[in-house]
Image (cartoon, rainbow, N blue to C red; front, side, top):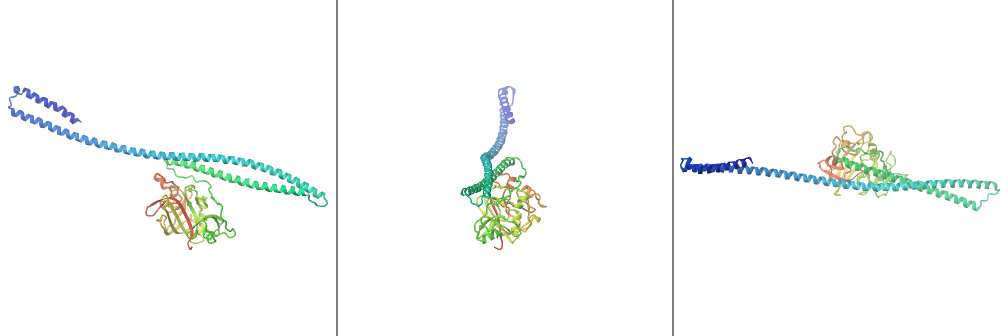
Amino acid sequence: MYTIKLFLFIIPLVISSKIDQDLYSPFDSISPQPKSRFAMLDDVKILANGLLQLGHGLKDFVHKTKGQINDIFEKLNIFDQSFYDLSLQTNEIKEEEKKLRTTTSKLQVKNEEVKNMSLELNSKLENVLEEKILLQQKVRYLEEQLTNLIKNQTEIQEHPEVTSLKTFVEQQDNSIKDLLQTVEEQYRQLNQQHSQIKEIENQLRRTGIQESTENSLSSKPRAPRTTPSLHLNETKNVEHDDIPADCTTIYNKGEHTSGIYSIRPSDSQVFNVYCDVKSGSSWTLIQHRIDGSQNFNETWENYKYGFGQLDGEFWLGLEKIYSIVKQSNYILRIELEDWKDTKHYIEYSFHLGNHETNYKLHLVEITGNVPSALLENKDLVFSTWDHRAKEHFNCPESYSGGWWWHDVCEENNLNGKYNKPRAKPKPERRRGIYWKSQNGRLYSIKSTKMLIHPRDL
């Protein structure tokens, strides 16, 4: 720009000097005409050189301006893309919040209904108890009168009216007892439903708080329930005088249907398990995850004795698993299903230690259609966030849920936090359910099963 101004200033001076030379040359100069022509050529050369420099300056200025404009456009494109991504994440969070609010409202309405029903049943129960007391008093009075009549009579002759009255009173008393049992059973069921609704509400609140805090904080997940227990659902009919030791024994006795059964391993108490029938035999299911409804970030005590529901998501319990596998040589089968509904499996020959060894696990792969993620021929020690074995301090802190670990915590964690398939920052994605093979491939898992079966069968 400075060059342009300079040449715009020089050009008029050159032209004016030329005009002055033409006007006054006959009087002031005695030079011949050829000398004046050479002077004009010099001026033209100077002017042409200036114009050439001016053209180069303009060219450089245009290139520089063009580069600046391109940088501005690139920055604008980056800003537009970032703003678009933020708007998508905001809309997704708003939709989830709306769903959670709707679910919470419905649960609150159901909770109020259950409370009202509970109050009504309490009032009815009190009325029934009062009626029972009155009837018992009447029965005592009639019994006393009947005893007096029998004593006063020389011959025991029971009148038909007294007999019918006594029979009627006994029937009424039996009816009242049955009614009381029915009311107490309904009251117990309502209390159980009420506690389940409260638990769901607490889970929803924790989920809402966790969704809001996880976007701004990187806190560690430490919100396990205090005393979750394994719900022993209704079992199928199995002979209790000869309770089998595992699901394979149940299958050999003719029970070829998957479901919940009672077993009693050697030197152990009776407990319920889920038997999964497949390939002409029955496997004992020790872990099952399908939808993330059960919190698996539990304490050592709960992992030791089990938690969850056998007909849903659950962990059978390390002590129960040990009582089964110590009877014989067992196979561990892991079944995985990803979000594309593709099913994988892998089977190991394994040995499990007792609680004194922190349930040390030793694996050797047998077969499967997915690469192994668990370390083989190594001693894997089970740890939770409140019970960490030596040299395994960082595993349960950075990976939620109890699991068998070695000195490296990046193999897999089938008891980790259940994440739905959507965009997550890297630390959050690391804590989800995944199966990372030895070759580095990462499988995102939707459902898992861990089953055991005697090896000799």
